[in-house]
Image (cartoon, rainbow, N blue to C red; front, side):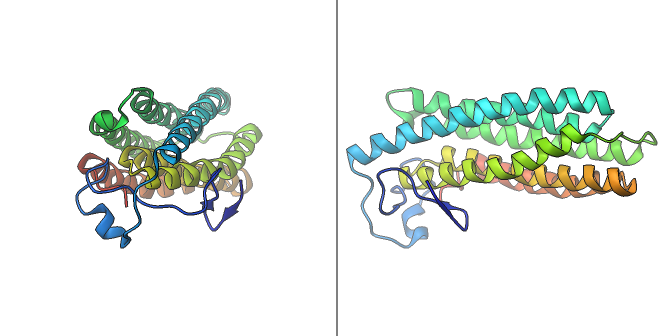
Length: 238
């Protein structure tokens, strides 16, 4: 597997092709993509489906570990940012579980809309929580302590999450699965939050700038609302 500006070469693939309109995408998906390439063959479709299942399982496993470490380290350091990051991981698990449920059935297309609704609600929950915690952190006079564990966790997530997101996004687009693409975008938001957390913890440790993290997190919350709206309307495939 190799990366090139966010793109990942999936096993047994030479090119990607978006799914047809109506196959998990909003109307006009193929027209938006500007291609006349046919949908994946049955054999390729099976490979992509297995690949999505594997990526979703990896995302769930990583986020469970991430949540436990972040919440524990956050409580030790009295860091609202770290605890919030851990709870974001819990929300990401819920989103990935919805996709896992979809692709566990014999006909994933039949479960597409329900999975998208769950993912959209997860986006909104993430935005609401990040916004509330950011405002609380700005208003709270108490300052969080230094957390070496939190800094390392944020750095690792900043490396791992883009890989998982790019791989799932590419597979989802080729399958024509809006839910897989939507979940990949939530994983990408987790990447942004990792960067925000890393900068916030770093500035707090080096200069005592406790306001840096919540301010940046508010921007992430706004992006999450937009992504949730698109997921609810099924506009994330292309």
